[in-house]
Image 1 (cartoon, helix red, strand yellow):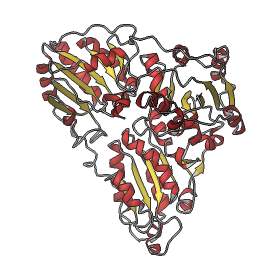
Image 2 (cartoon, rainbow, N blue to C red; image 1 turned 30 degrees about the horizontal axis):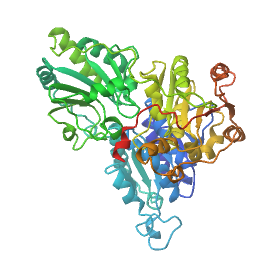
Image 3 (tube, rainbow, N blue to C red; image 1 turned 90 degrees about the vertical axis):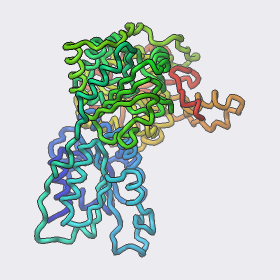
Image 4 (tube, one colour; image 1 turned 135 degrees about the vertical axis):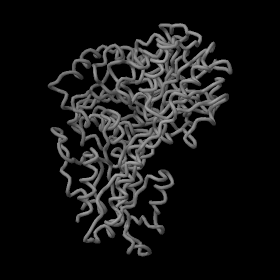
Length: 569
């Protein structure tokens, strides 16, 4: 039996048929069974030769755009370290993904092998297990291979990334009889905590009290999430706020939508969420109380109800958020769509008696937008024009740049034509490029947009040539500085000289770099006089086979979205 072929076939049976990464000593015999990816088809199993740092993020965008799992692969040493940057964000955002890396053979221990991964070198298995306990599977015997692959499948079913570690020296030892690959059905059953009890307690707690709903990114994984959250809001007449990615579960026309909270949050949403007290009830739909959502604050409501269907999701401790609750805490684990449907049906049969909320105001911000200086694009104006233009069925990514703080503040509400994602929990600069590539490959018909910064650009520009024919669209925010850092430090250290911020970047001909990699490139005029021609270019089917970079001259001093994290620094 060929172990590599068995692993590939098994993953393909799970729907894992796309790999990205770079070949090398430890994976050459694995990859020799996989055809290279071309932009024409995804039939069969395919491999995209793509720099390791960026390849590690490809499975994230692939999953977010399609709901399907992809794999990233790299050899030992620095390659494993680079690819695992994406692995970190997969963990932090509960995204199932497969990472495949090899290790030095046992016979090499103590003999200083190249890129030594043994305990005498990087000791990489323990490093990986420290980050992903229970999700690292060392494939070191044909006899145990079926069981370990089954265990890995169970973790993927729990929305966890997994690492398959190839011990090639042991896997080539052949055995006459190999156990069948059997998935233990008891492994992946998700026990649903009593729904009726949760609903009964919810009915009792909200009677005569104000109810606020926080919508998180797990809710956005349901195809009818926007419809359900709107029905729920109107049925219960309840105010809703949402996290950065939770916005994808909310309809733009939801009359009770008060906006984004915390990082880049809207004034009305922040005012509402910060006003919670012991007289109120908070319902959380699949949200992680991360720093960019609640900024280390506890839930100040008298009663907190959490609902989610990812076991031990990131942010939960012992599968619970009770450590965040100031008052009483109730937990439900099960499908969020069926829970909301049950609550709506129950309300129709016997109305709940919470205090109705006021309809959300049209403008969710209290302050006017700051204006950019001359010769720079007014980013508030650009975001608003794009918000009116986004084509249907699009997907966008915000990299670690000013866009991932400012765009949601300006636009205030999600756009029904486009889903935007930010891998902000790991906050890895440049990582959104790989995610955008994964999203585009998963569905070539979908328009994929990326907002990235001139600092982020330095982490992915060397891999642009490999995806020049994908039809990606990048808005490159050029402000000649690490904008998030500079804006923050003007408030944190106002008396410190600017040069000691260490945020300045050398100017680059970004359009020239893009063209050198086979991309199309355009410069956006500061007065937006060529924006309409760019809109036409981005939707021209005759040109969509070419990736496009749009350089945007940005004023680093144009303050838009809020950054409450500054208070922690």
